Amino acid sequence: MTDRRTIARVVLLTNPAAAAGHAEPAARRATARLRAHGITVDARAGASAADSLALARAAAASEDCDALVVVGGDGMINLGLQAVAGTTTPLGVVPAGTGNDHARAHGLPRNAPEAAADVIAAGRTRPVDLGRITAADGTTRWFGSVLASGFDSLVSDRTNRLRWPRGRMRYHLAIAVEFANLRPLPFRITLADGTEIRRDLTLAAVGNTSSYGGGMLVCPGADPADGLLDVTLVDAMPRRRIARFFPTLLKGTHIHHPEVTTYRTPSLRLSSPGITSYADGEFMAHLPIEVTAVPAALHLLGPVP
Image (cartoon, rainbow, N blue to C red; front, side):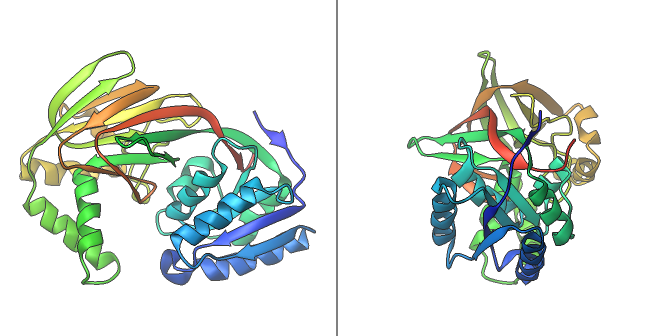
């Protein structure tokens, strides 16, 4: 169900570093288009992630802001979610990242700042589910696409520790190192209905939407409007089989492999010693965690489905 809102004033928040600096030009183009629609734009860029989050939360709490608009990739959208989730403030998105999995999931214009601005100006919002993560210390985080733990999170951990090389090569090196160190990861997973899974896994993915990593369909049936989370578990496998398996993630055909099990649940608990979790490309928490689908937690400015 969509709702029409009047968008007269927005706070537009940019991550200047997104997509190797492509977000800043996208922000300028989107700002010009929004102003051409007669919308007052308060353009801001935080000096740090904490500063950006403070700006986003201030915008979400302001009566003078009709929408928070974020310019950047999935990580920047994730930052926006921490501010607007559970509020009446809608989120507008100008995709300007490398992965753009949120944009894929919701049909938002990619690599087209003016078209994204037109969508925001039209003021059509729709309710979207979000995932809420509760860590062992009680802290909570929101995510919109896919939460990953296991091999994927180990690669992200490794990437964040490396200081060389720069850019995508650092990520590729992290994959190579973790692949060489690949080992079975003992997981304990409890679903909302009490089903308990104790198994050695390669990875566990929890999807509110279908893809991560720039279009890898790890949870191909996930629907961000059904109040449920799609869970994809990949059993531990020998390296040679894993090497042949990973390309199937691109098309979502991996779910037909005997080593893959899928579930659908409103909530679950994930536990594995020493393993972390990432979602929307950002670090979320160390396991164990509780993950819950929260229906209609976000009001998203988007095209009419």
